[in-house]
Length: 295
Picture (cartoon, rainbow, N blue to C red):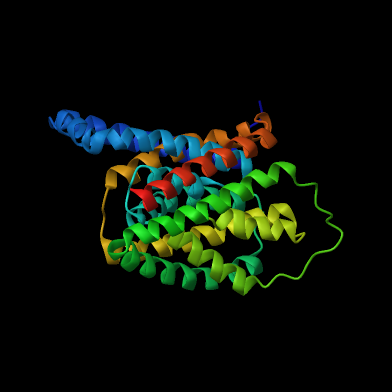
């Protein structure tokens, strides 16, 4: 089997990650800290292991549909009653690494338009900072209201994902005019504030408006990496590192799965994936809304 350059990059990232983990675990075992590590990972009702599964599942979804990592993670964490500001901070911290791997792959494959990245990334950075600062304040002091608002947003995204299963193929003959500054600003704010949504909004809009799919996805991924780093740094300075077990679980789950997501893309029935994921996000969002309002 011939391995593509994108696959090779992802495999290299996986090998480096596994090597680091093996060294860390062996070092802790040698120093007698392995039992203590096991105890720490069991905290908060074994949430590290649950987040490991969520990271794997979310990366499979993102790999097969080109979007959905943030939506799946946000919906799940809200469902588990994690505070909204911790949700977004954890997701963006983990995504800093997974989007880096994806960006490197797209750059090596020459799927990136520097002009498109610049037009999206600069306003996205501004939006991400505003979104992170807003969520830091609102999520801490108005957690219930913020959680309900974000749950309604993930409910909307669930219907958007569901509708993709029934959309006809777009006519690529005519490229529609797109305000990239507004798209980047709104996308950056929503992604930072809600914990996800850049893919369905920005990448989806670019493809719908007849941008070449490979450049739309590649450029959007690089811009997403830039805004993710910005959001993660902003959360770090405003909140510090909290719930690192959530971050570590999402990160390891995503990195382990990322090298194989390209292979899964060609094998998984995308239409059925849209139906399943859309329905799952809708149901979990409705439960979160119910718990936020009535409990």
